[in-house]
Length: 605
Image (tube, rainbow, N blue to C red; front, side, top):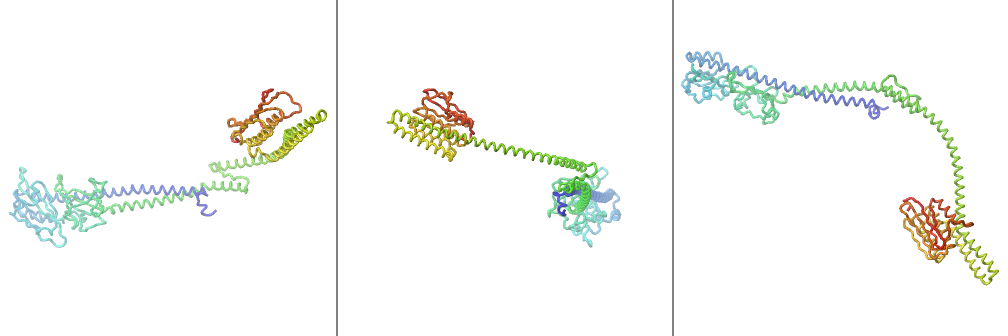
């Protein structure tokens, strides 16, 4: 057996089983890997979202704590108004070096005291009632917008421009009335350690991008080209309105995972001033998840291949016994072995082998019985053959007898009538010779005519034996010609009628009916002394054919014996031969009617 035959499932059950196991293992492993990989991918993405949310919340909390601590320090300095001296500002700036300036303004917006460190120009006595920190600081603690040192009025320091933000808090008296505003401007160098994420890079691909947005969504901290611009991104449809981390699509088509956390000027503030935003590219988010899914897919395929291999080995072991049974059955079929080698055991293969062995034994026993029966049958066939040959010989003899009877009837119908007519003429001539010699010449002419007619009838009978007009033209046409000759010969008045369906009838029974009709017409010609004759051939329904021959002659008694005359006897014999019903009605001086009815198959008509 070739290699292709061994792996063709149409020729090997083991190959079919192995291919089935391989297909099932591959299908299940691929489906399982896709399912588990999808679950693992979603879990990794969710973990990534939770991690980003925690980092964002932590960053927001750290910034809130840093801002609140400095805002509290500035507010404490303002509440110590009775001891407020430049030394207090110096102590505050020493504790918080990031404070670029500190100022105290009364309720009318006039600066009562100020301390500058090169980044601001506030001076005592100046008016600040139009500044944002003063306007907001009269109502609540406030975190102002962040701007770069390059945009401030003071000269910018060397290197990258630091960012600046403003803090303000209302100053109240013992009764709770606002009597002024204390404010400070600080640089961004005080930010927590993980704020280097707020880098100057414009498109970080391997790390989260950190931004700080104000209340209106303006970027106040972040890459230089983004500062001062509105954050414009559209949330994905499945994350629209989500408060937690979600995906947003930028105008350039990039998708970021975004998480936000508020930064409040004071703990418990109802209106946060800033928002910390961490954004991470979607490809970075899915990178780890896709790698894990790919590893799961490869592992599942390896496990599926191992499973298919083990299944193939197991299938080969299980089908090996069935293969041996098939080879044993094939050897018995080729007559290379007499019996099937039944595998040991009690499993289905052993049961199948035992069943095959029993069937083979039964077939061999039946074959022996069939051989014996065949011999007996051959003997009986030989006996039956000899019997059939004997019956065939008898049938041939019976056919000869029937043909003799037919010839006898034909001779009776032709030569016998002619001879009887000639005999009558000879007797008449003998009487005339003795009593009336003058009429002898006339009767001799009559005798010659009778002899000539008998010769014509004999020749006609011989022609009918050689040529079958009924078979060639049908019963109706043959009867019409015979009736026409009868009318021409006798000079009687006649009427003939034949249905088209009945006229087509033309098997061997039609020949018998035709001869019976001729015999009836000869009897009318010889004995009836009729003036008128009628012949009709009709189809009665779809199953019977009827022949009627009537004359208005002298009639006779059909039941009376007629020694030496065989016309009526011949008619009845012929009717019985073809299975027809014959009835002859006649009375003295009332004419004669012959009626014949034959049952025929509908398709013959």
